[in-house]
Length: 65
Image (cartoon, rainbow, N blue to C red):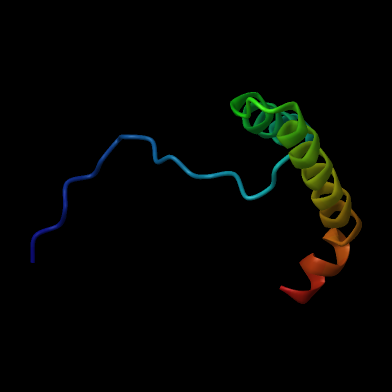
């Protein structure tokens, strides 16, 4: 049985935990893609609410998984 040749290429992995700078970067990218100020305001509010909820439930979520 032949073995596959060993690859020295570094494997890319995705982050499993997003830190605040990552979230702020993603939030800014989404908000800058919107042209309407009302849409920006609504999305900013929804993102902030989600991040607050997620951070407050992080300990609970990690024990449930």
